[in-house]
Length: 224
Image 1 (cartoon, rainbow, N blue to C red):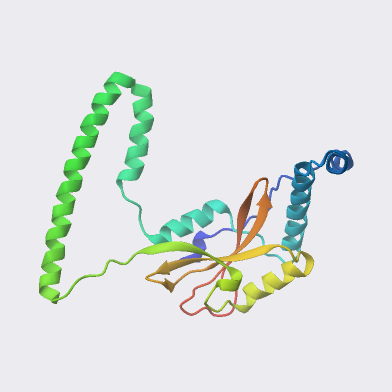
Image 2 (cartoon, rainbow, N blue to C red; image 1 turned 120 degrees about the vertical axis):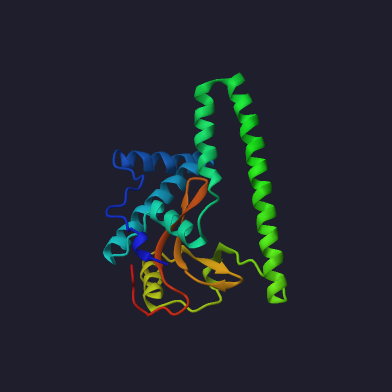
């Protein structure tokens, strides 16, 4: 795929503590020691970890790809979405502005029209599928692409040197960080993997996409 779709962060904006850090730290430590309440201390530690990790990323000049460009790239790799999805979203926005009674009538008509269109498309596709099978003498396999997240230790394919170097550079200073490979797979064949850094974020986690390469024959050098 066209890696030109991917854009790296020019300056990462993380929710870091900029005021009264010592006060916040003391509150977290006090709550943990006297009350056994560790969530505040854990939140502070996670913020400090993210800040420290991004300082390291800036030092090695590997800022993450922007999430919006990653989403655009992923959608382009999988293929075009069903054309009725954007239309349905626009219709929903218009429905709220029209009003409930009129909107219900319009929605009913829209659904009926959509069902008729889908039935027409279904029978058209079915007709051509039967025609192709008849001419080729065998069944036709539908190719499906999907993005799959692999733990780094369980990723079955080679990883290029530049991505391994990024892992080594980060783990040298932050040994507890987790890495994953998010790969586009087509019929269990890996196509376009990302190296993903996973960091704690509140009660959940957040993924940062650091590297990308073409599995079918990566050149060994960073392309984006």
